[in-house]
Image (tube, rainbow, N blue to C red; front, side):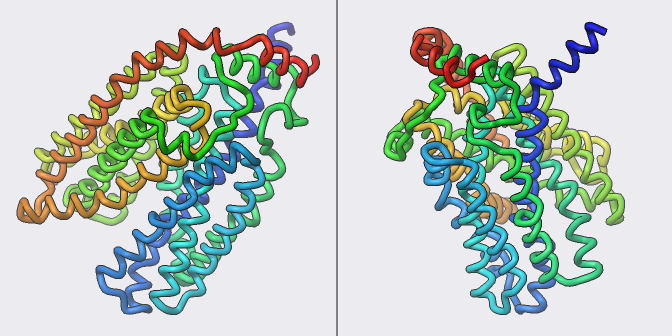
Amino acid sequence: MIQRMSSARNLSEMKRWTYILPVIVFIYVICYIDRTNISFALPHLKTDMHLSGAQEGLASGVFFWGYLLLQIPGGYLAERWSAKRWVAILMVLWSVAAIASGLTHTFGELLLARFLLGVAEGGVQPALMTTIRSWFPFSERSRAFAIFKLYTPIAAIVAAPFSGIILTFADWRWMFIIQGSAPLIVGLIAWLAVIRDTPAKAGWLSANERNYIENSRIEEGEPLKHRGTIKAALTSRIVWHFTLIYTLTQMGLLGLTLWMPSVLKQAFHTDMQVGLVAMLPQVAAGFAIILVGRSADRRGGHVAHMSAVLGAGAVILAAASLISGQQKWLLLGAMILGTAASIAWYGPFWATVTKLTPVAAAGAGMGLINGVGNLGSFFGPYIGGWLSDLSGGGYALTQVFFGAVFAVAALLVLPLRKKLREAADLARVDATPAEAEQASASNPA
């Protein structure tokens, strides 16, 4: 009986995991689907709008230029004003832009709709990350950010059948309209009902859990209220260090994207086989994200976890150039390991960002890292295509290059070990009695 009561009490004090994170993941799964669904529409757009290959590429890539615009302001406003209100506004705007994509009739209208979709979505991720930082102490953030990153494999598994069903019974216009309506109808309701900017504002949270979250953050030397500035983010060396690492990892991730489709069809000949096999790396990636994030929180060594995973990604990407389509099981194993390695570093990385980024640069800094880093996904295809042309159409040189990119990222992670140790040593000094008293006063027992 005592054990059951203890278990029930523990579950009641874990609402930060069962309330906050599911809503955040759901929001960004929808976001990711709206971002990538144009790949399913392009064959139809090519026919209806008579698009050239260059126009197809521009229609896909213009999103990322819009996506960059609100990254820094998005993190700043979420921190200084309200993540809850800011994301709610952006969800309405992104829904309107996504629906508008289905109402376009010219290439120019399509570009404008996709650009505005990128602008609206660009402010969402740094705001969600700011929310995670407010709700989870550093000792839990690798797991929290790892769970957030599950949006990638979930969206990859869900997007194809979701889009395929709509395109089977309707057309690309309805696909944009239906998928664009989801955040406004479902996501916005869930967001407003559950999310609060801080634990102190959540009436559904127990006093014990609220005290645990805020006291843990204070003990770790982190102030409960941040007053960051955009200038501090732009002038912070550590923020630019993180930005370089993130840019390289996004380019390295593209190495897998370029390689896998070209050989999957050779190894597994039917569309049904390719579809089923393509799900396995995503499932493995989901497990890897959680396991690495959990291990980093429980054992420490965030830098060791990141460098090991990035190093493994480097080896797998470079070695992939030696695998032919006839070695299908070896190919499948490399795909599974490579996909897992390409994103499993995410939890420890963003936990480290929230720990080492100066308080004055926190919100805007996360936006800068994510925004500029994602340009790696934009420039990567051009570099990969140039290297493929240079090598006569093959992917060997491309894979070696992207493997080297991951290796450089792994090396850039190593200097962070010393900085994390220094931050841990300063944590007790930063946790001032005044802040501890403030947390107790705002959360009476």
